[in-house]
Length: 484
Image (cartoon, rainbow, N blue to C red; front, side, top):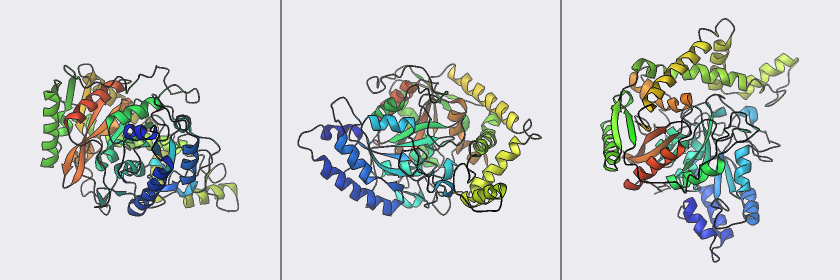
């Protein structure tokens, strides 16, 4: 079956002669096929989707009604197993749904599956999932990226037109680039996180994957808005993102972070980025190179590791086998907790908790956690200096194509400037809470590559508009990859 975008499928669904049930039966045949090929999902929810389809009120003005979608498996979904791809939550079935899940269900979307992810969203490869690695639709010897790799691959292989992910450092945008689709992390606070299993509360952001910018505008507009159950969600009115999409970007000022671009060693990726800059100039944007303090850029990775893992240590202290999670029998309460957490968490999670506990220890807080917070503030101030003059910050999404599954996390030089800066700079958007969108721009070695566009806080519309204009002069929207 041919993959459809949200708008394409909506037009079919409102047609009197379209057989919705037959479409969904064929869809789930494709779901099973892609699951065998790519290992995308933790739980396939065919019965739920067909029930939602039968009850959906499909109207001209309800663009998500009857549309199949996927949720990353850290979104609590009432009555449906929600594991965060961890043994600790392997049998967890929530009694409530996340706010954004409620919004999607109220919009009559149809849930196809809960997608695999790096365990507890801690990782960038999707190799740590309890169910095993998720593979890249464009080349199954390569990773999809993480931590939202299952969601990204489900859109990139064409089984659904949209999927939700979560982004703490680059967990939507990096896999979007690796898989050749659009990935968007809006402003921190633009969308409620109530009911989302957390990683790091000051960084976590709800976002989505689609195959074009128009579909992204539809999804983000549906999800956004104040939620009293999440005190960090914004009271600001949600714009009509789709209706306000505009290709006219003449006069907009775009800053190219030269300090990041200079680290690209792959000449094909560098040429593609330069061509993208040329396209933006041809569209009438003012594009200029801007330097950022190289010391601060090199500080992104260690600062992120300390803050994210400290917050994760606190957030997941409840996963002890007694209050929540995998229960292991032992002789005392303390021994139950030790046994349960030892059995329930993967080794990489334990290492992150060790770092987090070290940074939060009374004797270390000032020189580790508090210092990391101060460095974060300096980085954000440097970023805001750029935003005083520019509407958008443009960078490459990554310096490489998706790594081979056997080579991911095995870099020979993880201390090089190319790795430390080029492969970690997307966390700028999490540090500052700014909207950040990844857009596919071409192929290298038959694998997709992308750029990232980041705007000022709550200026999602500007980011969407520039991305929309650029997308329309490129030839990479609406693509997907199945077996040859």
